[in-house]
Amino acid sequence: MDTLLSYQLLTALAPADIALLFWYSLLLDVPRYLMTIGTAAVVPHVPPTPTDYKISAVVACHNEEVHLRECVESLRCVSEIIVVDDGSTDNTPYVIAELLVEGKIAKAFRIEERSSKPHAVNVGLKYASHPYVLILDSDTVILDQGAVRKAAGYLAEDESVGGVSLNIRIRNQDETLITRHQAIEYVVSIGMGKRMSDALGILSNVSGAAGLFRKSALDDVGGLDIEVAEDAALSMKLRAAGWKLRFAPDAWAATRAPETIHRLLMQRLRWDSSIVTIWWRKFAKNLNPFSKHFAPMNLLTSLDVVVYSILLPLLLPVYALWLYNNTDGFTPVILTTIFMGLTVMESCIILLSGISIKLLPYVPFYVIVQNLIMRPARTIFVVAEMVFLLSRRDNYIPKHQRWRLT
Image 1 (cartoon, rainbow, N blue to C red):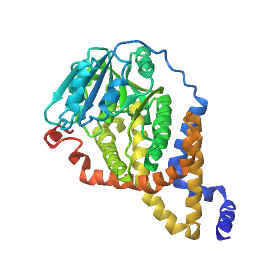
Image 2: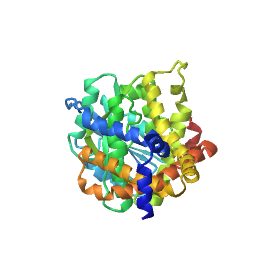
Image 3: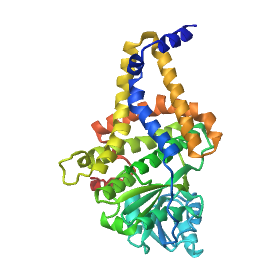
Image 4: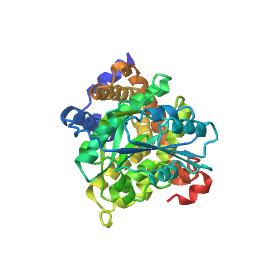
């Protein structure tokens, strides 16, 4: 009865009062969802003609004896596969040797001491023979043989495009509730989110799991930087150098996701720390209109990341405290209303994405985890990076290579 009465009182409020109560979601959540839904519903996706340009693939791997063969065998669509073993201590070298004997890879190199994925990729790039280069993780597979040709169409269509992000699914989505959570997240935040960013010309990241690049663009910016988020750093380097980035929603690849909440949080600690490092520190010049490097679209790109990946989590505890101090018994009703609204909008995006509706029953779980665990965690991670520079001590970059961090 109390809950029903609370809802009746809430609906009796003036629109201005309701807007005040829900200011966090109205300012930071709703616009993003509406833009994403609007882009999917209104802006037609007209893919370029797929191209048959010759493509080199560079696969950097460390201790990937389980996944490497499947990755390589999914790359029948490319002309040349280069594998770089980054100091593996398992049976990865033997798998590579077998693939060489079978003729499934063209070139293979080994770095005796692990030096980081970006360094290993740079080694492979030196030997890439073709004008387009596919860079992908060794646990990623290309889902259909036309995917890379579809992505290559964006490069062939426009000479100013330097990189194209493939669309990523979760390979192991049915393993646990946490992988189902990520399957929804990849559809909503990454897939549909990138489609919106692509339509607006503010795409900020070509996925490190699977991205196709123009070799001359990579040479132009000096390859990958040694960074914890090497894909983000490379993407912003390309934008700063004047290259465009595109997203190919019909070019599907699949990668493996963490299967436990602990592993997921450790992954996002690295991701969220790098957000501060890349977009706030390394490319803060994009926010300065008086900088010689300033470009309006790069400003919008950086603002998009800063607002939704840094400002949004930092304002979450402010809103939670404000809500607790100003709404008395209304707080549970307001939070429940927000939960219901987010669930509806997430479901709309999933339906518009064309992905199997079997994910729909898990949307409420996704909304709970995303807002009660992942957002507070992001708040902690962002603050910790600002104060303690966690990304500069992440084991993703071995100690002997950290002097290269910029």
